Length: 481
Ligand SMILES: Nc1ncnc2c1ncn2[C@@H]1O[C@H](COP(=O)(O)OP(=O)(O)OP(=O)(O)O)[C@@H](O)[C@H]1O
Ligand SMILES: [Mg+2]
Image 1: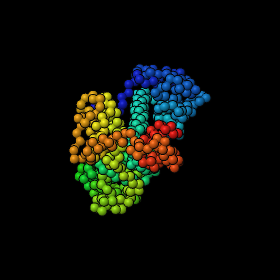
Image 2: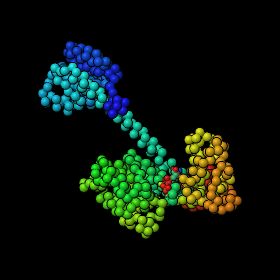
Image 3: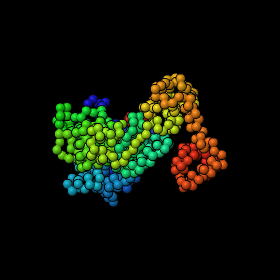
Image 4: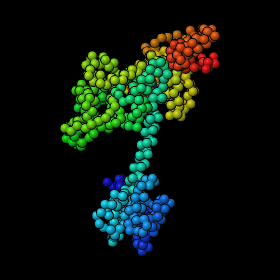
């Protein structure tokens, strides 16, 4: 390892301030002169009381503390320094004539970091000071890392909280309801849905909105690893367990301990590994490949599949017993074609995201664009919609997304665009049945639905057969409180 890559932090003496505490002036001066010659900044205190004041006021980097002092001895001062609530680590080296074992043990037990017996060798004292300052630097680096981990984990919680999943269609409301319940307990969750519907987003949403939000979320794609590898990937392996196992490696189960393991594409996991997975889930212990010991693990499992899980069981792709184990809570994420009312808000949110990312100012999409989006089947679901919108950004800083900015495969257009224009109109202004009703009758209808639903807007919207956002608009228009 060369100098630049060394993990041991270099200590630049001038940066460090050493507090010398001794009731004897000669001792203070001797230490002061030795440390100053080596470039350290020094301050002195002649009693325990003064030392504590100096620690609070001058914030030294290290304390050289005499033990035998009148009134407050070094042990007591050390105990007070270490018991303080100050941020960070302040190394204390006891400097004493008491070389007996009991004093030494007492010093360490009270919290001292090192101990040097008088008469001491000057070079040894300097070496101990430098060593302690290196430890202090490491501790500072660790403190910064800890803060960064806290920052990043709160960023993840914000980013993946299920509030950020777009969609307020009935179909998605049901998904959110189950997610909400699932995030409050730690039972297994099985998520099914076509590719690109947002299964991983749902899995992360449950984790980062729930009880385990501060614990790890470890995703593993069961389809991308060959059989032999997936086992060691999940459960770890011992050194020499197979060719290439040069060092002992912990598995993803251990990495996810106390958190969530997300088993994506579970139906693609080899059947043999599924049996081992089931055993782990039942017994709560893993056995690394090539090992004999059993390691307890406490992991919440969320799994996902593009296939219909029941059909996968019938087809022999998923073990039935494992299916029951994984399927405590079941979430079916609906395809986008079954919740087209989510398209406008999704498109808008994606535009906001890409405007920020590419520094553009796309304001929205034309009616024709929305119309063809509503007429399209979206076989690639939300991922495809997001990609189509992103692809429009090749046209520079356009104002609106127009049909000429994207291309959708014609054979996946459900209906003729003209008919879907009517749909768009109905979609934008309200359902035709309500639109045709007399204003008074409509108001009464809404009021009745709200009464029947005990003022629950979601239920009232369901009774009326309209979307919740439309209900709010109508309530505002009719001044219904
Ligand atoms: N409701 C949603 N709101 C916002 N973004 C979404 C939503 N659903 C999906 N996405 C976005 O669509 C993309 C695909 O989502 P995700 O990877 O979760 O899908 P998936 O169901 O796991 O797909 P696959 O089966 O292919 O792995 C991601 O970029 C995701 O952020
Ligand atoms: Mg996925």
